[in-house]
Length: 91
Image (cartoon, rainbow, N blue to C red; front, side, top):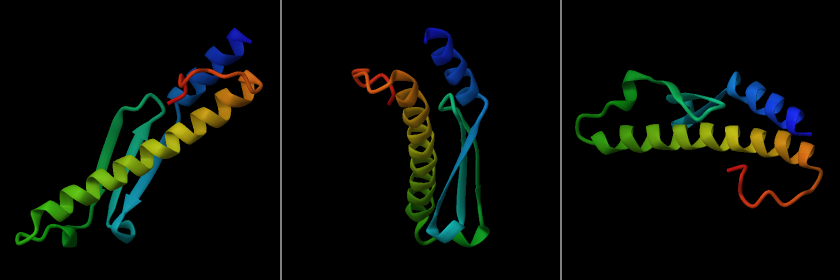
């Protein structure tokens, strides 16, 4: 089982997860390791009168991508653990 867990963690590390915000005007991509790979946004989100909005949208997109990564990790690792309580080790 330990080998399966290690293989699952390695597989997760090679995946990428995407999150969007503002109806898709901001897109964030993270690796399964939690590393932020990129943040892309449409120029329309850059309002000089409201710079905080761009920051808020980036945070929302990154959080959504991280949540997708955590859900995948929990699904993969939880399935291998067979219902064992892993004490928060999955996220």
